[in-house]
Image 1 (cartoon, rainbow, N blue to C red):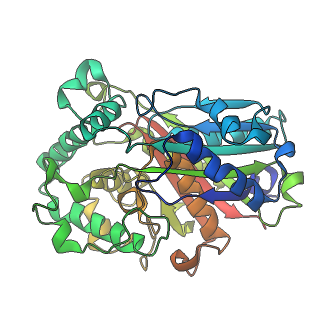
Image 2 (cartoon, one colour; image 1 turned 60 degrees about the vertical axis):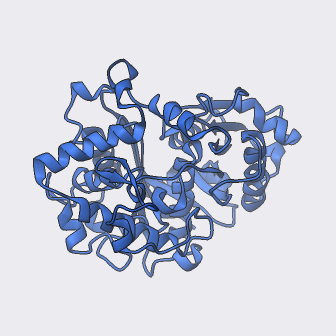
Length: 392
């Protein structure tokens, strides 16, 4: 038996469209996916043993106590033990991993995992300041925005390995091309390489050398999964197992590490593959955290697709394209789909689960037996990696 069969499994999910949504707060967003996920899993609300909520917030709303908001939005869930997790942009995966541990430890047989964020309700400059809290303010506040942190990382990479503007534009173009087929994506449009590679009024520099098309979107949205113990999952209509998963951390201050190495990402991804007993060659797709195009490029190197400083080889050879050797971000990634902070990690697992069960619609790949997910918080500080496969 594989670990995927023996471990907690995903038996249902739900996902809103991402973008500027009508719900005024996370209460409405959480309610929008909780009932639908339970219905998809065919699990009555009274059979849920625990609720795990991923919401970053940190100033997007004055209302916090996010775990309790689930019951406020759906009275049936108001008396089920609920816990809120936060781990920067990896908040959704933190909630999911906590739920998996809860079920694996025997503390419960089922858990509802919810990720949500309402980002568009505050002015743009406030959004930038809120997101800067995912950096080390004591040393990095002068950057002024989280985009500028990654702009500095990109500039350092260019200085060390040569100009990569075209490479970043090709990553952006790939993800927007993929996202055009994603019904949940915030931008469902193939922007093309030339647009992504040209600074213009519609694609200005955000944090040199990063252009708007190099940066993920400010988004509202929510996603949910239901996880269950194997005996419960055996009665479900579908079951997706975790062949391997790992969580690794790196130092928060950029001054204490090489920010171009993404060492924590390398550790988490390698550990997940090791636990799964597979190599890169066995994977059929990866959903990865392209908060900025430079992040996806550095992840190519961290995952072992290319040597350090040679990530452009993945782009030049088309390895990550939909029809390439290892498709990456077939969903459109954060670049096209959007990036509501707390929802992102859960969303990525939903998209991967849909692929391995053959239920991804227009996004479906011809072969999707093993899918990897990589979600990170901060500049590769909190790193979560999973390998998913269909159990039934």
